[in-house]
Image (tube, rainbow, N blue to C red; front, side, top):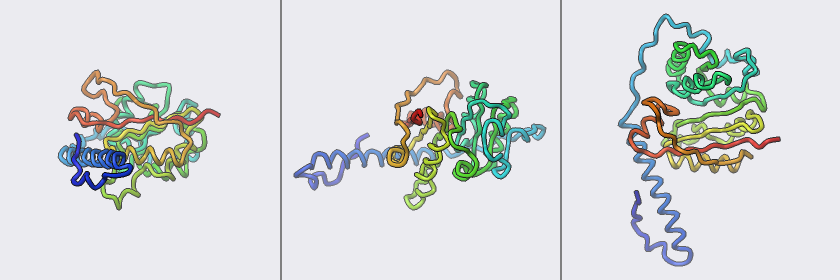
Length: 257
């Protein structure tokens, strides 16, 4: 949807057309993000289902301080398999689908809200997905303190909190300091997957990645048709696509040695 600028005549003159186009694009992006925020506000989040009290979560849920240092597939799973980390796992849809689809990989999900980390861990335990674990804690801190260089096969960041208010943007996970640790911890050829439903956040993150890392990208990611009702990367992707709202996807790769 295009947004009409109030005073386009003010941009007349030298380079006026280019300025008008840039402002038009900015206004359109802001309109899209406001629409996304309203949609998220009206949808809200459903209450979590009750967790079976008989489920043993001890092998599937860790507190941040209990994460082994160094944090590797060997120290977490006693297997030297490719390790992938998801930052902000929410209810854990990606974790359980990815772990089930790729038993030859190990997955660690990090979720700062304990009740969601526990819920995601319960879903793993219920399905017996022993190649995946959840951590209740701060991803930025864990990357800085626990994950060694050149360790990760992939890092997944899907629909992180956009922290809508400008004064709160410093709380966003896609900050230069964190992304340097992502680059450091990825093995050569390792991938960063970043998706969001907020266009402004997407563009800002691409700029930060370009300015502060040597990761190759962004590579476009095609939208794949869902083959069942839960065939989505996350619950947020499912919501946005069922409401015919855009999702902004990107993939980056660490250069080979």
